Image (tube, rainbow, N blue to C red; front, side, top):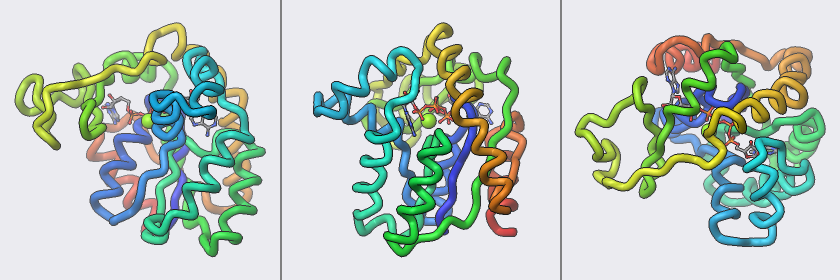
Length: 215
Ligand code: AP5
Ligand code: MG
């Protein structure tokens, strides 16, 4: 099963992708995570992406499509993938439509996670992530069971993303509405679009996604 999670910054794409990875044995392909790794490693792609990401704008289609093209050649993607944060422009969606059959893969569903803009700033500004395993948390909506200790791996080291400040979130939201939201109509035309209520609590969103992808 190959699915796309489509939604604005803070919609819960990463949170749900990790839950689906565990529940269904799928592999999360987050272009945001891949680009952040590239920035951290100081690679050519990372150097080109760094400022664009810090400004809350979209990295070029060429770079992102290249990253996904290469990643889809890894054998683990045969288990099925969850695209998290890709595609984000119509050009990326068209490129994916060409890439998937070349890799003998097909798309089962596109899940739109609908969330009001007002909620997103709160979601994003309260987010923090385990520096060791990447598990995501929130200051108010998803706490660690033991204060300061990751539930998943026991690490005591956490990070916050440099683009998770109110000003950059506004640019990211603007980029979403201008460049990514047109994909809702794009996938509605293909009959693959399912919409879930991304404002519900985390467990309820998971239930709605499971229902949507089983249909
Ligand atoms: P990316 O990393 O993809 O960021 P994003 O799309 O802005 O989305 P986020 O990761 O911020 O949110 P999320 O939906 O994963 O939410 P999360 O689950 O963490 O991209 C970053 C940058 O990289 C882009 O700005 C761009 O520059 C570049 N980029 C990436 N892909 C690209 C592409 N394809 N093309 C071009 N450029 C690209 O949840 C957020 C918080 O809310 C967490 O704290 C979580 O615990 C909490 N939460 C989650 N669900 C709920 C819930 N239901 N109720 C309450 N709290 C919840
Ligand atoms: Mg994410």
